Length: 544
Image (cartoon, rainbow, N blue to C red; front, top):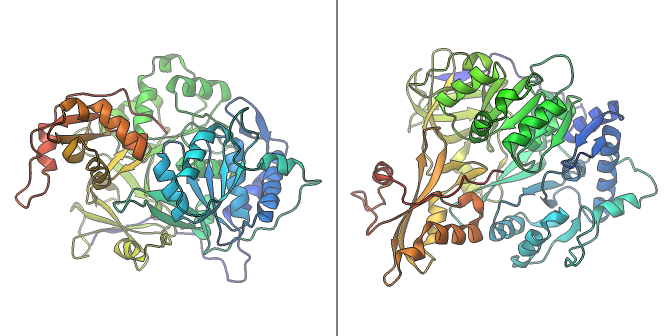
């Protein structure tokens, strides 16, 4: 049997009589402990103290409560990386409402579907994303939510709704809002791609989130952590920011990922922690300013979200030193394993690299198709039992039953455990392409392409680069009477970006006379990958 559990025991369960402490309570307590310290530095350099952030959270909660925000209500948040986005999320969670994190990389159609399917009551909008918000609202088929903005709109912009920050400033004093969340309440619904046209909503409860932040594995003693958030706060960077604030640290925000700017900020701001996807880490390694940049403040670079290249991570370990922490997880189960500096000390490049051992309280089992546990070294589907397991998919009990059983999550990933309990990923059961920023489901993209008048047949598949990143490739047969130019990379990228967002935009398009099929009549994507010689490519894909 191959079942491995962290050797570190999970914290004992609190007695039923103990009042619930939510993740927001942890953040607010840490902010109140030292109100004069800088907590968040905006992209323009403006510093927000811990006391000011604490007050803003309470003021926002008081204002949002007057608009009906509370338990069992949904607030969708559309914002770039700014301090108000953190404060608003904390305010919504303090009131016990659930939050849906939207971001500008989603197409307007997808934003509308996500906001409507989650039954959004209030939409909070970054003024810089006015046009995106307007397109989202125009795409709704039902009642529109209440809209509020983080500050005034630019001159001439069509109004969206009241200014939340102005309403907060108008309060005569900062009220003390008592937390209303319960452990079983959803603090968040995170959406992943789906084949039904509606992305799956992963319900994340307050209890697991609070437990995870309370036990976040900060490895360095001494000064509090200082995080540079250079990827979207709507993704894992937001949770790492929460953990940083709980630990008494501070967060520096960048709006976008630029390797030269990141390196300069690490040196200038004495950054201790970064969270990156592997392709972004490779861009840091390739940046010409790296050799002359002082990175002595860095104690942790956490990475994950997609497979890492063993040769590139060996290079990273040699260049950056013992600061690398590889994380493997899923929205459905939060963090599963972690590979620390010791796992990066001598990385072999002739096979997959380990994603580490189970986190505290997490049990990993490798099982065959019949659900039987497999011995060390044998590959099978990875099953996870964890305090961080999702509550289920939003209003999809059918999908929940397929993935969640007796507290175990079927990850859809294939891997094996070695004799020491280290996990290795070798494949996945799901037909999904992992790119920077999220997952691309080929069937979903194929359905869209088959609505294009110039497309007779299309197959979408992932192709791995030497760095182990994945690219979206499209094999397409033009419809009769349509020239190849109608299905060129430029044409299809524009079509896909309009309807699905930049995340789904392909790197290469291959125009064929016919899509090869397997004996049972399905597109032979394995054969397509072996034939792949891109006919046209784009600039590097956008980053979150």
